[in-house]
Length: 145
Image 1 (cartoon, rainbow, N blue to C red):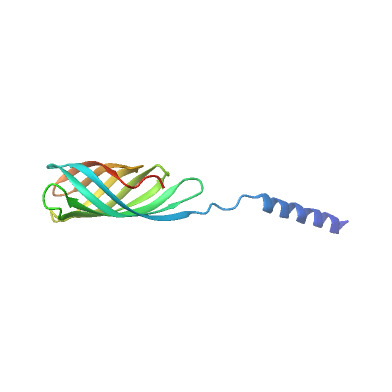
Image 2: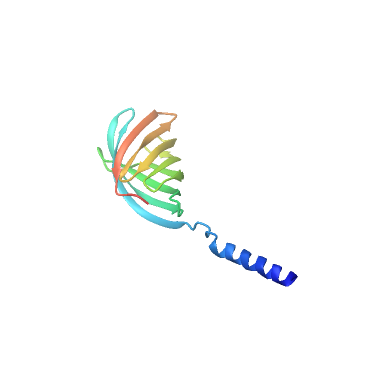
């Protein structure tokens, strides 16, 4: 009788394990992106930007990742004027909060950045001790993850 009880318990345990959901697996993607934004700081100016975005998307739709971006002064000489790296934590497929840091070549100073990335849209604010706050809004080739 003991053997029958153990066999029944073992078969119940195996059935429960077979029906249990598997852990969520993340899909990783790396995409190149291009865009243009309008920055409102000490002066209002358009900037072109290019970069790479890497993201891990879980099966529940949660997005974590990072972007590395180089900005070019569109109004003057198309010379690189900023570089920044931003991290995405706890985002969704269609929108992601971002926080990061970078360097402003025109001003010769570091900067911090916080923003929101959406499907083909981006916006936020850069902060530099030399120039203060510089909000921006733009469009980009990067859509949903």
